[in-house]
Image 1 (cartoon, rainbow, N blue to C red):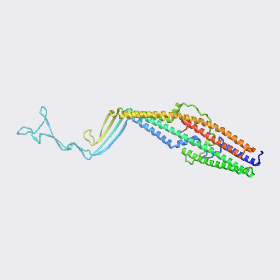
Image 2: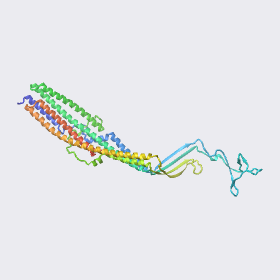
Image 3: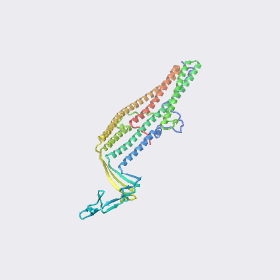
Image 4: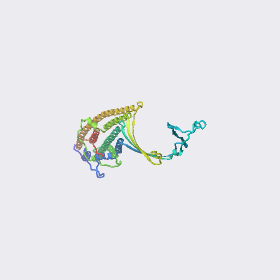
Amino acid sequence: MRPTLPHIHFYRGLKAAVSLALIASSATMQAQMPEIGGETVSLDSCRAMAIANNKQLRIQAEQIRAAGYQKKEAFAAYLPQIDFAGGYVYNSNDINILGADQHLPIMNFDGQGYTFDLVTNPATGLPLVVDGKPVPKQVAYLPKSAMSFDMHNVFFGAVTLTQPIFMGGKIVAMNKITGYAEELAKSMHENGAQDIIYAVDAAYWQVVSLNAKKKLAVSYVALLDTLHRNVQAMIDQGVATRSDLLTVDVKLNAANVDLVKVENGLSLSRMALAQICGLPVNTQMALKDEYAPHTDDAPVATTYNMPDVYSRRQDLHALELGIKIADQQSKIAMSSMLPTAALIGSYTVSNPNMNDGFEKKFGGSWHIGGVIRIPLWHWGGNYNKYRAARTQANIMRLRLEDAKEMVDLQVSQAAYKAREAMKTYDMTRANLRQADENLRQAQLGFKAGVQTTDNVMEAQTAWLKANSENIDAEIDVSLCRVYLSKVLGTLEYTHE
């Protein structure tokens, strides 16, 4: 059957629309680059911004600094400590050693020894007794004021030096713990950074995917719009029916709805990417991979050296550090059962002082000595504390073993998904080539008058599906690769 003039016009319009769609939604997704700040943003730039602006990573960086300070604090326990203490006390009363003036009897030497010289009764020649006490002939007078001291204002001070000699291993254990804690903080920071990198990559490729689907949806709408005009022309020529036009309109309306959904999703995805990067959510970024090919066709490795994976995984390293910390904590618990010794030296000063009698001036003296403490019996409290610490260390070891088993499963699953993503991508590319050829054949058949409008729309739908699946597979390959790098501990990135 020879094609009529409306058929020829329809074919030309359809050919132009299909060509436009194929160019706009090809694997490279080439388009004119919008000017946003004069530059496009690469994936590495998004990673760098996210790492620099992420509040949790900044908190972890501060925790690293805090751990460093704690390490220095623990080292200071090895060194002698010098302290000063001073004060002032006001007393309302003086110190009176005697309650009243005193009269002390005097003893005389009689050639054989010392005896009291007593007053005798002339009649009897015996010592005179008054109130049951003999009366001495001579007394030493000791006034109360001679033994009274002014203690109203007292000033005192002391400089003390303490040098630990043996603390049961507690100081050594604390230094090791703080060193491990600093290393643990660094590991947690690295692990957190990798989580941020994966989140950035997911948001980045989501924007790239939706942008490609938006171009595809625009091309498909243009394709159906051209088909709508050509069918209308065919109706005017009497070679098509209203049913054909309604069928195209239904497809066109559905395509417009899909386009709105994609545009909304793209806007939300750009907001999510900006938020992860630490930028205002309304920031518009032109992503480099929206306008350039980004598919990695390199094969996925199928074998891995798991001991190397274990050594690179920061979460496993953190558990290993937790075991070391628990071991040192058990040593601290053991130190409570061991003797401790320290050297103490001090210089004290006071006013008034008693260095040379009672003087109302500052005077001081040196003191040096040692202190030893030996635990004897605590009803098993310290020993049970030690056993509890050892139990915590065993728990940490079991957690590490369990985590390694989970890492084995995680690596196997990630590698499997990456290989399947590559297979799916290869199949979608093959399907895309078939869909292009199917659409071309439908065009030729319509031109020859052997294909209907329904046949062309079916070819268009298959072409749209093939392109959409190819975009999804392409993005899935990128995400699977970065996830595999994350679980293998080989995810590389630049950070301060």
